Structures are given as structure tokens and as C-alpha cells.
Length: 64
View 1 (tube, one colour):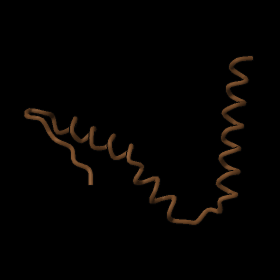
View 2 (cartoon, one colour):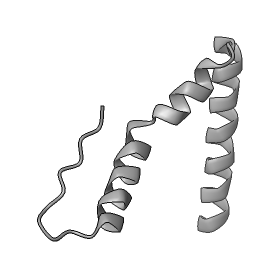
View 3 (cartoon, one colour):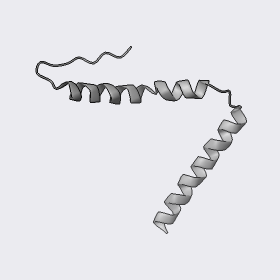
View 4 (cartoon, helix red, strand yellow):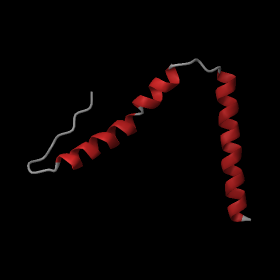
């Protein structure tokens, strides 16, 4: 459960923005979506390797 203390005279929009930021950092929505379907560990590893290769390719293109 997330608790956002609101200071005296603080705008409700600002407090709501803090709440949304804190909620995103906890990763609750990502975790729920990941649990909806089982993904085999080999598929997860393959995706991680592909992402790392893509990022490395981007970095190589920037340097060279």
C-alpha cells in the first residue's frame, strides 16, 4: 500500500503526480501483466540477449 503524505497547502495535483510516480517505480502494473501468462525462461533469456545486442549496436553506431 502506497502512502503519500500531503503537506499543508500542497496542491492536490502535485500530490497526485507524486503518487503516480511512486506507483510507477514500484512496478506493480508491469508485474501484473507479466503474471498473466507464463513465459519460458529460454524465451526470456533470448529476449534479453536480443535487447542487449540492439543496445550495443546503437552504442557502436554512435561511437563510430
